Length: 393
Image (cartoon, rainbow, N blue to C red):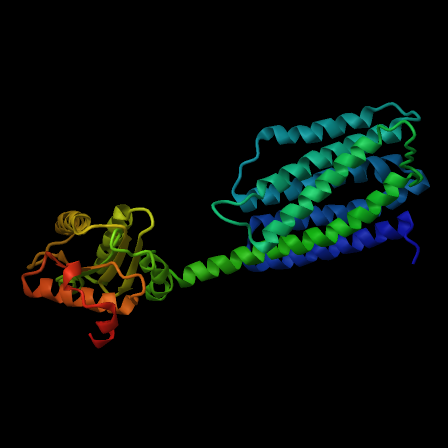
């Protein structure tokens, strides 16, 4: 197959249409706005590629000016999709791109018309595409594979159009938009077909990775309180406990609501749910950086802290107990006061397992219940058995 401009435009239209359908199918299942914008962009490229075939028949407006304008619109939609994906807000100044291109309609005809048209179009696309690539920067970590690929493709695509705009300024450069003549035009058509394929693959991979992350996040969250669930706690706790040392012990607090059954029996399970959510909000607000909080189930919660002392644990426990008791009294009237019992344990052994420290905290929790509730029992470090004897507990 000869890669003449006509063949390349037909291939581009077909690939763009297929990309639009693929992204639209993804959007129909996940309803992500960025997918819809990207799909619309590829649809516009498909239409523009078909219209561009008319230029060899002498249709300047529909075959040259209009398709070139559609290509700018398509890249603007790519930028809007990236902005939606990254939760960035585009300033209104970006609408000036349309004003600049509309002004090109009034360019007088002349031997230099093709160069000015192609150079302006290429510069506008370069600015839009490079901005989209720069929006995809790591946020507190590394980009996913799909997002990193999309960023690379957008930046490479934008740099190509920037070089393309610069090439039209060369005195010896020959450009004829009406007849598809000029090396820069043929190279652009080849690059455009490749870019469509790479952009579509990267865009699809980017959104799929985000969807997988969201599914994993939902699976790790307690649906009522939004805290980690038991599964997530067992996955995340080892990394935190591994930081324990004699100089910076870790602490585990096991929390249980006193007389919680009275709230459910007297005021209904919806009231019990509101009380659980109130406690989870208190815990979330009291957590220092690097701490973990989870709902084990029912009215039991766990807090894991790193680099703390027994004084810090006691202060946090007292703050939670006093604030929660006050809120519970204001929310519901019960025969017995609704309060918190807490069992806490400190760990300075980085190779200890979570289950061992949960057992220690559980024993301390029941000790606080036996001693009257609304209190904390702390297992001090000196009362911990050596690590080699933990399995015997």
